[in-house]
Image (cartoon, rainbow, N blue to C red; front, side, top):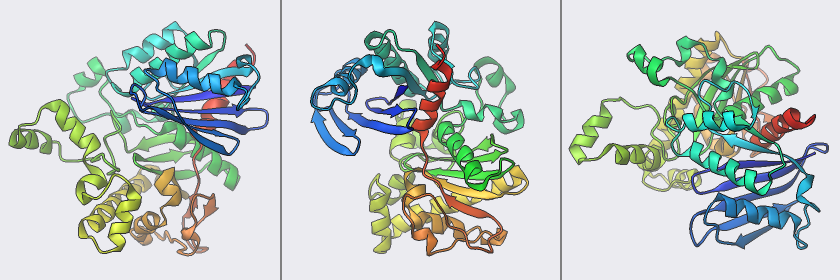
Length: 396
């Protein structure tokens, strides 16, 4: 079976076509600026890359163009759309309802709609992708894979906020956590690498967005993101945890409305807000290496906070066996890994600085005498989504 994996953002669409028998990615695509006249598709078929300028006013037009290319004479990825046995949709927020991936029906769509208040930017995009596929591939079964579901194993003491309990009772205001598909993949992959399932793992998914997850016996125990992806460690443009009183104080001082304040915390904060250099960590690293004080501060403060969360999760897990680094920066940023691990030497956690120079490859980077094993494990959310879609639909 071939599974089409779709990840719809507010104005972008990431997609892959995966042959489940061969576990081979046949096609990878990234549609940018959907809804504008300058939208374009980066299209990669078995390593052959091209950029296609093609306006897409909405997700239906974007997905329609991708499907057309898959069967076109120029690319001929598949002979007919009937070869697509299932579509797997990444859905950001499943609330408390979804603890596992599910086949999409009217009830599932309604439940995703009900969670729009918890993910006002992401869930509508996911629903748009589902709607488009129902029109374009009406006979193809679809599966929803939720970014929040992996964290539904957290105990109430981990997810409850110390606010009036009625907020949770009435509106389910609680910690949910995100990057769950990635954390789940890493947990499974570490079990394969080590041959052990009874592990205490702290996974650091570090990219533009960043979150840590405390994993015990393959299950999420705690995580850094909260009701929304804004909470936790500092990120590329997100502030992470701050004193809540800062928000109304800044709003009064600068006469800022709530929506604008949220935009600032999501889009103008984090490493970009402190450094003032760029939203790209590679630019900030370059400026830091040249002695730029604000860039150094942005990176060091982030590493300091991440290390503190690792220490917190060691308490949560009552120890740790493995620390993993995933995500674009976690997999490639040897400077960031070293900064973080420097703070952890008091736990007997030792990084092999030579092995740490590795970029983007699965490898162990701790010293032989380290009390905790440290690995780089490139994440693969798409294979998780494709596998769930395959398993749920293969016998239909």
